[in-house]
Amino acid sequence: MSDQLILLVPDSDGERLDKYVASSLPGTSRTHVQHLVESGHITVNNEPTRSSYRLVSGDVIRVNLPAAEPDEVFPQRIDLDILYEDDTLCAINKPAGMVVHPAYGNRTGTLVNAALAHWPQMRGIGGNVERSGVVHRLDKETSGVIVLAKNEETHAALQEQFKQRSVYKRYLALVEGLPTSTSGVIEAPIGRDQRQRKMMSVQPGGREAATRYDLVEDLGTHALLSLEPYTGRTHQIRVHLSWLGHPVVGDRVYGYRKQRIKMKRFFLHAAELHIDSPSTGERLKFSAPMPAHLEDTLAKLRRNLGAPWED
Image (cartoon, rainbow, N blue to C red; front, side):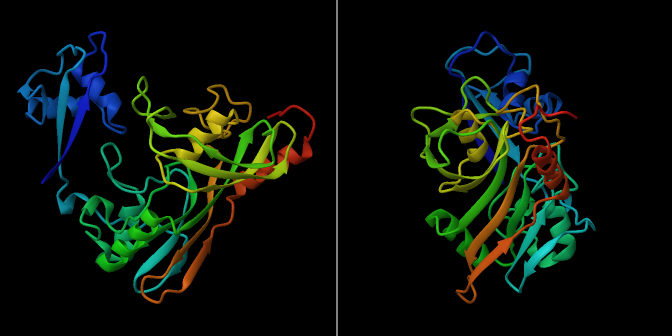
């Protein structure tokens, strides 16, 4: 079994095939793309080609990604901050810097690697070994609550809750500047950016996306916001806040390249997650405390309120 991706080249100035595909697949190196081309897993207009092929507008690229073998996803003894667990599911406080599941470029050290060491029965749940137990995802640099399923029935039931939008999710973000309104709903469609294919952007024809925000604290040059995403688009909160003109602090992809507050991660934390237990029907409410280094950043802003940030 393999996953097939189809990439339509909208316009091109003769970019190399390997460079184009690598930029379209986050976490994939040009070297790996070249191996896929050489092994016939990448074609252009249904024809085998070379990595150096220069693309033209209208080219159709097909990428067959070979599925990982089960023994390629190894359990790893990594400490996890377990917020809750029963026989059917678990809730984890994921640290920033941890990728949720293995992918090209990140084969070890992921949440799935750690989870398989804690719960071997989770292997393959959801039909994909690399995503064993995964129901939803958080970005690598986002900390906070994430839920994993321990059996197929729970996995299917939780996915349906996310699909029906009956799951409550609340995030905390420190943003640049102060929104003109203390609360509101950002309704702006999101799709893959046409120029930077690893990024998403607000654009006509994108998928429906809505995010509620509420001001938690005015910190002068910055604001702490509580955010409730009503939909679950890739990078939704980061894209919406950037579009609003108040990007997340530390976000060098959707925010400022030169950050006033220097952080090794961006300031986005999944603070709460509420779901219905598929086994009992009980409403389960999970919360994750804000990491100490984020609290320290807020404390420093409070001390310097009204003054420029100083390292």
